[in-house]
Every structure is written in C-alpha cells, then in structure tokens.
Amino acid sequence: MTIASLVVAMIVVLTLRSEIDLRAQTAQFVEMLRAQGNLGLMLLGLAYIPASLLFVPSPLLTISGGFVFGMVRAVIAISLGSTLAASVTFLVGRTLLRQFIEQKVANDARFRALDQAVGQHGFKIVFLSRLSPVLPYNLLNYAFGVTRVRFRDYVLASWSGMFPGTCLYVSIGAAAKTLTEVTSGSSQSGIAQQALFGFGLLATALVSVILTKIAKKALADVTVVVPTTET
Image (tube, rainbow, N blue to C red):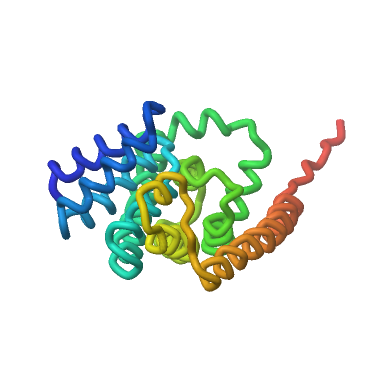
C-alpha cells in the first residue's frame, strides 16, 4: 500500500461523493481504472477506505469494479478492500473517536443492550448485520468499535457477511455492456443474474426477520431489574 495510491483513492471517493454529475464522474472513474491496469485493482480496493470513513455508499464502486475487471478479479480486490475498510473504520471508532461516540450513545438503552449482546454473540450479530442492507453499514463500522466485540470476530464476520453482496454487485457490473448500465446500477443480465438478484432480495427479507428476533431477544436478556432498597 503506497501513500500515493491511498491519496488517489481518497480523491476518487471525494469526487464520487459530490453531487455534480455523478454519472460523468463514475464514467471517468471507470476509464481511470482501465488505464491503470493491475494498479487499478489496488486503487479500487483502497477506495473503500475513504468511502467507509466518509459515509459514502459503495455499491457504485463495486459495480464499476465488476464492469472493468470481471467477476473473479473484482470480487477478490473488493472483498479484501471492503474488509480492510471496515476494519480501519472500526479501529478509528475504537481509538480516535471512541470518546466522541460513547458520549453520543451513553444514554441509549438500545445501544447498551446491543453492547452486552455483542459481547456474548459478537460474530453472529456482526455477520447478520452485514447481510442486511437495511442497517447503516458505515455507521455500524464506527459503532461496533465501541462495543465489546473482539476484533478478530468483527473482521471475520464482516468479510463473510459482506461477501454475498459483493458477489451480487460485482456480477451486475460484469454483466453490463455499456457505461450507461454501470452508472444507472443496472444491466441487461440473463436469467441466472435475475435469479441471483431475486435470491438476494429473499435472503435480505429473511435476514431482516431473523435479525429483528435476535435484537428483541438480546434486549430482553440484558434487561436489568434494579432492586429497590428498603428504607
């Protein structure tokens, strides 16, 4: 990892974050990846670090990667890059921003319950949260940093939980035939692609139901009844 590459990735993400002609900026990003060859794979992976730190949605990055590099190479680079990004954000939340985040959630009973639940079932809760697109991915990266989840569990659960979504978005990009399809986040894919997308929607619905049940159970399990003292 070079400092220059990280700076370039930061510029790319800041550009994509701006609301000025997003489609044109995405097209330029795709052409830049093509021009860089194998270095473009490194830049693609590194781009997820500033995206995670700056709360930038990453599906467009993932689709662009699939369009330029194809299924296998893009999945490898993006899976590694997004996991590294989630880990960096987690560590920032656990160190540099820990006090700030703790102050924000200090009086939130739901967060305290989540903290205790994660301390007992860290891998399971992180894994399920990664499968569901309903939950705020970038915010959770910071929030998990101030919970008691072990870093090892967090990294493994994040990687495995994000992998299906990575494959889905990369396949959309790989199936795209034009930049217009990439910038619109869609492609004229075949039956297999449509079936995979439908399965992803079904899995999301099921995960959301399971995650809700786990959250309710966690809240019930960690409810503490404070005994009254006799005067």
